[in-house]
Image 1 (cartoon, helix red, strand yellow):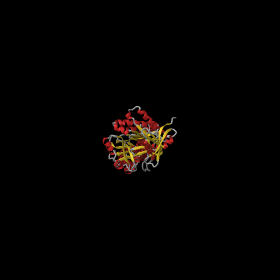
Image 2 (cartoon, one colour):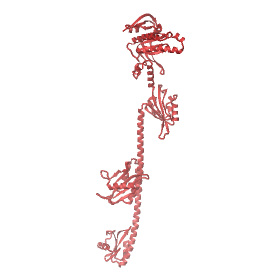
Image 3 (cartoon, helix red, strand yellow):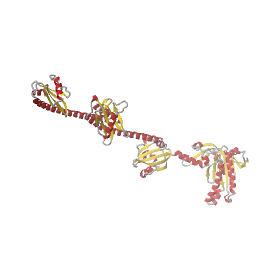
Length: 611
């Protein structure tokens, strides 16, 4: 354009363009350097267009500021004509420069928009794979620093106490701290929500441009992103600010999602930990724990329930309880579950008895209650069960023992009564039978109430004598009583002597009792005592057990009692041999006892040897 315009000024005129400092733009080897210097010196004090003997020049302006000079040298026309032509040339050049600047701005804006879209797209893909907050923040900062070409940067987030702290950084000092001005800028931007650029900030390192944008969502402030020290000494631009703001907005969304994910994961882990904890508790509880949902499907079946009911948990969970626990269908359990679910009331300490699939008889204590959600809705039924089979057996055995022993002796017995031989033990014992003579005639002549009262008085005398001499009353048989000495319940080394003392003491007690009652109530006792081997233990069914002795010794003692006259005590030979030095007896003719091949020698007890 300059070459086309120069002939209008003159055939030997040369045109050139310089920058604001006088450096030639383009290739103009024929333009005198000295002329350029002289023209610039003249322009300092002259008007907009300067014409001198050395040439002429005029200032070029674009976007409201001077950007260079147009110079002319050679044989110029008159000053007025030169000024007019240079003015026209300047206007044309300024128009072209304006168009070029607009194109450049448009191209730059297009490039910035492309960079922004490309960055956000790539960042979205990158952040979509990040579920951890720390990893996400570091990737955001890395991407921003690379695209905007910042050497240093940090992501600052509000902590639980509302303080803005560094959550991720790059290129900072070894201690990870920010300069005071950088921290202050980040805090202001985070508080106000308005991005800021400070390109004229200087510190000990020189000029360090700063760019900060807020990180926030529509609901709350999260913090700020701060970049510093752009590469090659450049400054941050409005495009950089816009790009970083868009990145920060997207990062804020991903950050909230990542935090939400971490919260969900933490809650899941807490729930899993709590479940494991509860599972461990359920597993360690001695009681069986079974829970069902509203459809009667089993949801919990702990280890104790497995052991008590002999049903594996994997065969119980997620199945209807009436299928799993069908063997309890004929017990009150189904009714209890229905009542708890319908009326939402607990059922406490219900006992049921049934047989397990393996055939074992079991006694269960049940506690049932509703399972409720956080809003009070019914979620199902909880069943806590305990196997009380052994407990009930223990209680039955204790109750059985209490029938035979004084309370003070019962309390001293071992917990495991199996040690006492309740299941059956062969040993040497002494058996005593006592029968009220004349009772049949008395009962026929008196009303039942009086009969019962009188018989109880005599039996009380018998029990008192037996217990006083460390024996146990085995049973009452109408008007007769059976007593045992030296049982596993109450061992006694001199059991024969104790039994003889009890028999003699009973006769003396009856005689003394006769002194206090009317003649028509004066009945007598016939007593038989025998020592020998017998099997002692519980006899009967599980629901009804009795402690007794079985064997020939028992039969002989019973026969002796049947042969004894009113007020008479008969001893077998083995009993007499055990106490011969302590008693006075009268040998009687041998008798044949039913069921024995040989005759039995018997002795009538006359008295006890004093001392």
